Length: 93
Image (tube, rainbow, N blue to C red; front, side, top):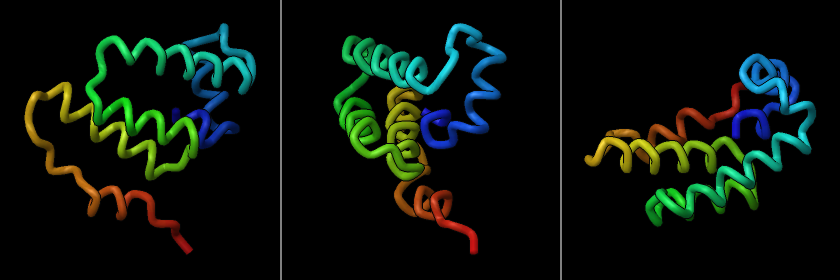
């Protein structure tokens, strides 16, 4: 997901772990596959957030997906919420 948000930096990093992903088309296809796989195990909140990211890939939608994943994985609440997402997505002048 981060590679979709910052392709120049992301492609460089992703190739270290996934040399089979040669270009952004490969990355987008892999992301689609992972989202389809998530249907099997992700809760509704995560699926909705990932769906929003796929339609509108922004840092805010990425963070909403991640927060949903954190909540699900930990089985408890997380203090990361809209206020923190807002701070993390602010553009620096």
